[in-house]
Length: 503
Image (cartoon, rainbow, N blue to C red; front, side, top):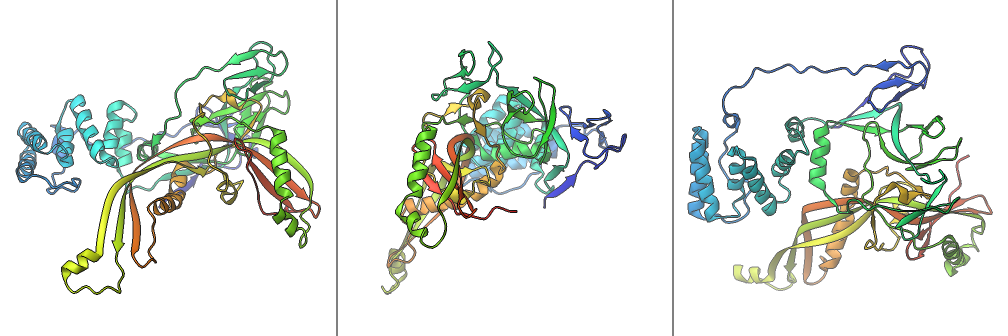
């Protein structure tokens, strides 16, 4: 159950002015007019008495092997049980020795690796055995969580919080504007406006012609979904932000926006900025960007050709769909891309018309195959507009020339901020994943010889890429408005459904 909490009053407690409160970089509620700050309330936890003795004494010893999927050698199983007996008695050296002997006999004995990692006091040994668990069971949350602690990506307190699955997610709505950190995109020579080159290798100044080569840092590799969710849950509070307070460092002006755009132009001095982060760290930076290959002229011709197609001309006999004005916008849309590894099961059932005279005949009529398969770069749009019905019709993008993200690559472009986070996208994309696995392995439950394909996801990773799309806003002669999209690499054009704009 998710609990959503509001955090701020509508009026400043000091000057009673409405709409003047915002969350600053220090995460403190602040009034823009009188400077009032609401001090952070420090929640003092009731300190529990120091628990003396070995922390391993608090481990819960349970028998059985819930994690191991292999057939364990009988002698290895005996050594594993002996290790649990020693651990229950507090004889940890003997317990470790027994578990290690079990691993010598069965290297894939996941439960034995887990217990060695839990009982060992050596961080290197813990790291090795938790890594072995991940190698055999990529979705083991305990091993992922403990490895994050060992690497320093999480504190012990955060790991304990992430492990408590009984607690509700603490989701809070920031119902006041949240301050943001922005990167100003200006020429280092004259302070003019920069534009990204088509090959995304450098930026040019529109005024003095100065060229700046972009320094590449990092890569566009994906992140493991379960590890990212553990990190987010360990942070505790998750924020939903609706308004942002922008402060222009160039002219000092301030304004509040509600739209979800990463690229901002100051209306007072004309300087260009890219949002880097907000005060609550409520969104992720992109991992990479795919450059445009199609210019505005080609994109406009693609839209005109689609509007002049046979199907559109046929519609014109029944409705007034003739375009009046067409506005073209060059936009980078955020897309989540998922890589999936899964265990696929294919069950083949012979026709029921054949009679099974014996149990052996029945077995011959049924067969089952199990194997591991993978899908790469499954896209899911991170915005609600344009709709998924429209963006899902775009052809596959070539990601081989994706560049590591640099804010300057967005110079001169409009870029949308995602409104659907990776957790929601990972749930919504599963239908597409299932359809692809079933199509690849010829799922056909209605044939005479039934072929049923099912899958179980073993691991999932994701990355956020900015994808090039031309967006056409088409106003028809009858006042209806429809969207058109042009693929920023291939020039493919698709048209949406016309609708009457709200009055």
